[in-house]
Length: 598
Image 1 (spheres, one colour):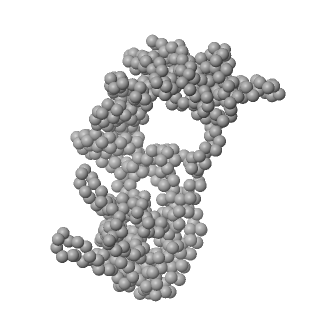
Image 2 (tube, one colour):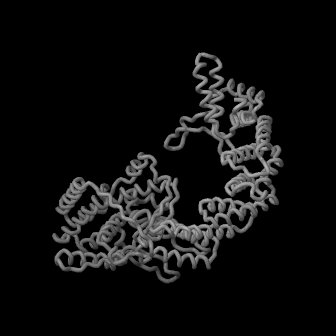
Image 3 (cartoon, helix red, strand yellow):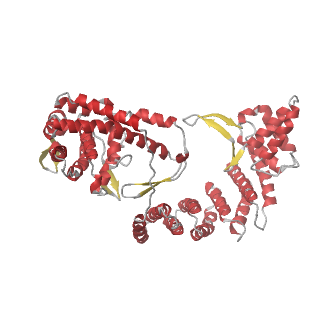
């Protein structure tokens, strides 16, 4: 080990050799010592600290097993490692031993041990830091690891030998052509992790190499490294109390260059996503000229978007059986009176899938590839939303898909049968529905509100909802009774969709839930997404009803309010299915008790 260890970060070859040799010493007392050696060498080194190479955690992140771990050594093991560090002539080993001892709990976590670790690390750096570039990429990572460890430990013990570490950093950063951009960037990131160690005047000098690295990223182009440079530049500007707009502009340039570079992508997804990121960066920089320019380019490129369609066939027999079951259930319901039908639709707990159980089921599936991939989601207007991997978006997509399938193959066949057969037998129509809403829900109540000093104003919501409900039933009845009828649900969907936001806001205000926010210093009303996601509003609704409202009206589902309000819908998007779901939303919402103003 003393003669052949020449690696600081990874020692797998060495530990494997020790393990093979140890098989012949199974009965020997020294095998325990070899075990400690193997464990000490198997700790990974990342961002200047030791960690296990593998670990198991519970669903909530609690570590239940890790290898290697400090617990395996005990007092005797740490005594042994200290004796080895004391007599070893190999600085790779000495550095590892002392770092491990300083990192572990116990008497060796003291300033003396930390200094001995830094001494070993600096001796290794003195050997490695040359006035010529290092061609071996592994050696580059070795140097970075040595530097990170030394700076981290020094920062904890009154910056022991920090001036020598600053000399090493300056040598790397300011010797032209010595190291590559990724190396310089890693050094700068380490420095920024310890702003109390580097003085303001020293930090100011980092702008030069950082701007040079960003320039190279734009020229290559390399948007991935540019993102790291931007993060470092943003941190540096913040520490120096400088305007970060410069770095937002530079990142926008990098994305813009990468979009131009990837115009070979015939689908246009990659350049479109890069232009979207560039647009966001220029907006953050308040660069109105570039925002306007990139916005036009983004729109033109969006028109060239080519999305391939992949069909995943679902098993027909189970789905047909489910649909037939729901149709039969609807016909059974239609044996009741009009008011009983509406009461069931408004209050039956089995109307929607249990959202809590659905979430638990998806959580049990564990992780898949999409949990780590960056995804591009396109809305109805092909606006792109970029979701970075590791944020749980894949599980949200799974939940939305499962919910959508339930509504399509279970709820919609049931509701459609109730509406169609109910119209034909005279139990479900505009008159019976409006009458039930007027008599059984708060939507038909006469309400009062202040009127800016004028007499109190009276109103009710049903007067605003009734025209849309009447229009729907006129259209639907015509389609059922005439084969050549032309149905048009634009007016009723356009009318009732924004009314739901007003109904929700009114309900929230009367429950003393804040519905105001600010934007650019101006007070305004919250959008429907903000109100529905308010923790306080959730206390008034059953979780399954709230999940349905979110699915229907917000970006977590079909986003009906946004698509209608911003005219993203074309004529063919105005389906009767949306109007049926809107009617159900009104029924479900109306059954809740309106809170009296305090």
